[in-house]
Amino acid sequence: MVTPSSKEENKNQSFPQVVDPRFIIITPARDEEKYIEKTIHSVISQTITPLQWIIVNDGSTDKTGEIIDSYAKDFDWISPVHRQNRGFRKNGSGVMEAFYDGYSKINFDFGYLVKLDSDLSFDNDYFENCFKQFYEIPKLGIGGGVIYNVRNNRQILEKQPSFHVRGATKIYKRDCWKEIGGLIKYTGWDTLDEVKANMLGWKTGSFKSIKLVQHRTTGGADGILKDFYKNGRANYITGYHPIFMAASCVKRLTRTPFVIASMSMFAGYISGYINRTPKVEDRVVVKYMRTQQMNKLLGRESIWN
Image (tube, rainbow, N blue to C red; front, side):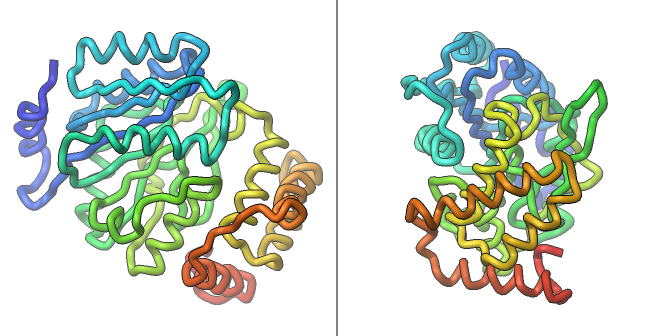
């Protein structure tokens, strides 16, 4: 059994004295009995383990909760949280509800806060290598590895803008976390956090040489087209510029699944206007994001480059 004090001793052997890799992980999980042990084994075998790992069983109907509890008996730094079943998977806002249930159970001061999905596997030096990146780039506020999806027994890199870190694996430096004021509690949280961090002078981005394998393809729980629709709606909520959104949909036409993915994404975006869905109220952040998006379209320097 690993205790916080023994982890502190292990930490000092791997890092310069000025580095503070004390970290806490929060993992929302719903119906992940097929994959969650891959994630658990990856974390417990790390060269640097967390002060606390809060795994939130978000009303699972399978054995996810039982699996979490069984490992918590052997590792006192694993803290299970069990939520009632709402009857369905609630993307975006549901993930944030579970995340903040876990956040309320934090027992330690931390140097980094990690949001980690429950269908990932990664090398045992994953966190050590990530924290070295933070050490080398003092103004790095949000980081994480790159995601590879498993398709036909092959690992395929999931492409993304250079400033972006996938929501499945977010590492927040404490000072950056405090400055951005945490996360919005609805769909689009995993883009707006980085936009706001960049606006405040922080760097964000994924580490190309550090990878994680995602065993459930992004959007796999709901279906690909539904996921594109959800992403389009998220882009409306977070305030994407309509011209940038239209350009993104046109660009998406050249990638599989052809046409229908772009239509689904655009339909999700338009649904926000039709249904008068509430949007992000922080006009300063939205204005900054739209300026960056238009700079991208005009070939100027932008965080979207």
